[in-house]
Image (cartoon, rainbow, N blue to C red; front, top):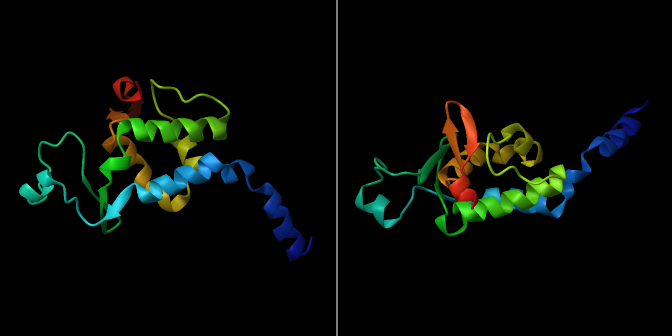
Length: 143
C-alpha cells in the first residue's frame, strides 16, 4: 500500500459521529464557555480575586492562561441541555442524570484542545461533583 492509499484509508477510519451538529455545537460551546482573564464579577472585584467561600470557581488557570467562566451561558441547566443533546447524538442513548459521569466517553467527542475546559465547566456549573475521585451527576442541577 502506498502513502496515498494509507492516507485515504485513514479518512474512512475517522468516526463520523464527530461531525454531527450536536458534537460540533458542544465543542464550540466549550470554546466560548470561558473568557480571557480573571473574573470581573462584583464579588471577585470587591474581593480582589479571592474566591474563598465561593461554592463554585470563577477564575481558572488553563496551562498558564487565566480564564473566567461566562456565567450567562454556563449555568448548570445550560450545560445540562448541551450535554444531553451531544450525549444522545453521539452515544444514541439518554444521558444518565444520576450516578457516575463517564468522563472518558465525553472526551471521545470533545476536541483535544478543549479537554482541559471540560471538567472545570462541569464542576463549576454544579452539574457534577467530585466525590472521592468519582464525578457524580448532581440531581438538583439536572432537574
